Amino acid sequence: MTIFTNNLKRIFKSKSNIIFMVIFPIVLIIFFIGANSGESKFSIGVVDNDNTKLTKLLVKQLEKGNEVNDLKESQIKKSLINLKNDYVIQIPKGFTKDLIEGKDVNIKAYAINETNAYMAPKFSIESFVGAAKTIGKSCGKNETLFYKAMDKYKEGVFEVKYENMDNSKVSKKNTLLALGFLVFNMMMLGVNIIPIILKDKKTKVYYRIFTGPIKARSYTLQNLLSFLVVLIIQIAIIFGFMIKVFNMKFPSVINMFLLFVIFSIFVAAFALFICDNSKDMRRASIISTLTVTPMAMLGGCFWPRGIMPQTLQNISKFIPVTWMLSAANKLMYNESLYSVLQEILVLFLFTIIFMLLVSWRKKDIIN
Image 1 (cartoon, rainbow, N blue to C red):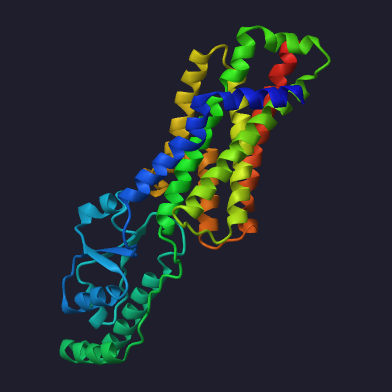
Image 2 (image 1 turned 60 degrees about the horizontal axis):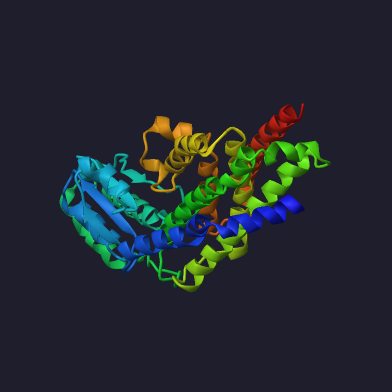
């Protein structure tokens, strides 16, 4: 394990590695949480194209426990991108008239995160619309009778009560974005420790190693293990910071930690792949720039994937970061580790591919 221990010594000697391991992710999290601090309420945007007494009753119903914002149709996408609203509904023109006449109506809904976070307001809307439709049919299209019945319904309707069961200082939405920053920093740390092997290449140590008894597989595994240990240390430090300092809550800290450990295996394999295809730091820097940042952007480290055009969303399915953050998103909403088995298998598949590419390259060098 000479290569393993020697790598660890050289990694922790570098100040830039310490910056990418601890300081940079912590600064990003502090900045982001500070910019988004305050009481967290589920925010609903409403585009009311009908603007009737009935739609105003619906808005009042949604205001119970939520923050409701009036929007124009052109503002829907922007409000979701800027995280001003978690959920947006669009009430069509003629909505009230169709309800009173007992016709089927459709309220369009928009959300970015594919979670069950917006199920409560969705259920409240469906309940309200269902009751209004039933009342409309029973009133024989009489608008006066309809609103009298709706007033009675409003007085006796059960109330959906929204309670925040998460006593953390940071909302799940912000916690997920903080985890996205951690994913990005793990990849940056991975490529930042590449110079260790590149230095061996430059001094010809890299090639002399294979003239000795060490095998290519052992050399690759020891490098992978040393990178993996550093990444796990980073995960442990940042998780401790998020939990102790910001009181971030996870349904299962163990499950989330294990997920990030699995991702760290991919990051280590990916870093070795970049190193293996780089003769010097200039080429490694170019490859890193052309891969890490675009992967982070398309995968959802900086913003939700749902705001991107459908073409980019389809492309992002071939990026491991997408699967990593999708799994983290599920775990944040009380899903079990078994429920993210598909995402974990995809991450392992990417890891195996990069490891095979590195191993084959080593065999070529030896031959």
